[in-house]
Amino acid sequence: MNLEIERKFLIKNTEFKKACFKKKHIIQGFLNSNKNRVVRVRIIDNSAFLTIKGISDKSGTTRFEWEKEIALEEAKALLILCEKEIIEKNRYYHTLGKHIIEIDEFLGKNKGLLIAEIELKSKNESFLKPDYLGVEVTNEEKYYNSSLSKNPFKNWS
Image 1 (spheres, rainbow, N blue to C red):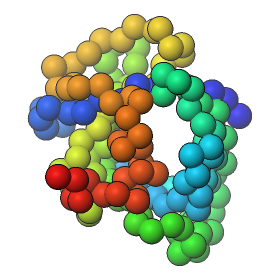
Image 2: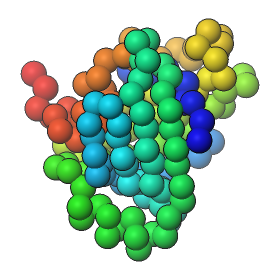
Image 3: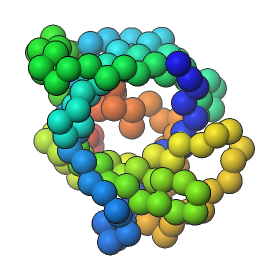
Image 4: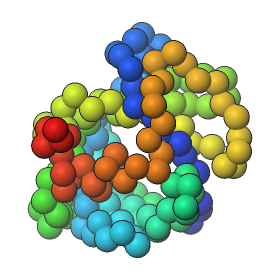
């Protein structure tokens, strides 16, 4: 159990790919995407996780998070029970200063959407901002993965 503190940004271009040291494929679904709690099943390459997240604070940067690794076969079975759309994306990792920036390149019905996340130790912690970072969307719910599963990027006008 811990508090997750992160900020989210849109990405201006794909220049980030040149700086990344790792790429992983992610498939995830939501067993519950209630505003007060999210229960997520996620497969990252050949590992699987069950995650529960609480409601975000007013700034959208901080919330309770609990995660446990589960068997891959269990995760595949749980994905069948998930709400509406399954999220699929490639995640790229870029080290910048003392932080790792995770960039999600969404696939399927969210194709074309690129979002970076930076996990911090405190709300006010400073970090280096690469040129590819665009507008901050930390507190905009439509960019939450749980929202993207209900209203995919391809449906936005």
